[in-house]
Length: 134
Image 1: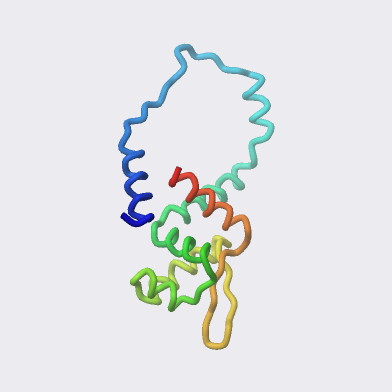
Image 2: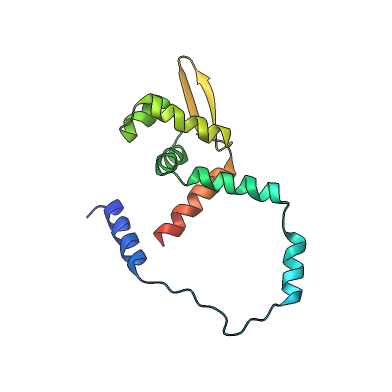
C-alpha cells in the first residue's frame, strides 16, 4: 500500500470513531475569563474577513491547488494537467485564491506562474496537513 493510501486509510479510520461533546453539569460563568477574552476580541469586520478566508479554504479544488503550490510554483497548464481539469476552471479558482490574497502570480514569457502569496499561507497548509495526518 503506498504512503498516500495508508494516510487516507488512517484518516478515515480515525474519523469513524464517534465523538461526543461534553457539557458542564452546572451553568457557571467565569467572569474573569469572559472579561479578559472579551477585551481581546477583534472587531466584527476583522472576524468576518477571517471567516471569508476560511470559506475559500472550504473548497476541495482550491485546497488541491494550494497544496500543489505548497510543493512548487506552477503555471496554470501544469495545475490543470495535474488535477485533470481544464485551464478555464483552474483560472477561475486561482482568481478566487488571488482575491483572497492566498496566491500571487508573475509572468515568465508566455506563462503565468503562480505561487503561495507568503509564508503565512504555507504555514496554514503545512499545519493543516499535519493536523489531518496525525
